[in-house]
Length: 117
Image (cartoon, rainbow, N blue to C red; front, side):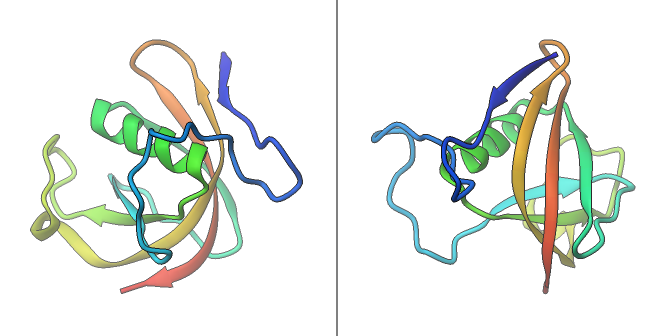
């Protein structure tokens, strides 16, 4: 397993290239749909992600320090999700580490911080 990103200072922020992410509002969230997984506030959890778009979003969130909204999918077998396919209640968290265990499988370590609806 190889670590894709690590905090670069005591603020917990990840190094990000200048041109990687456009300017986003301070309260912006990346949304990650979850299948059959619930995050509990204050708990550090590991989530496995495989879908390329989710891997890219998680990597950007980890590098930039942007918080992530985790919402449960209504259809856990669907690979393509739209906002109408997600429940409206979820958890906001911070990705603290992203680990790769192969080309298609990645694990993100998340600290759940607040509820969202």
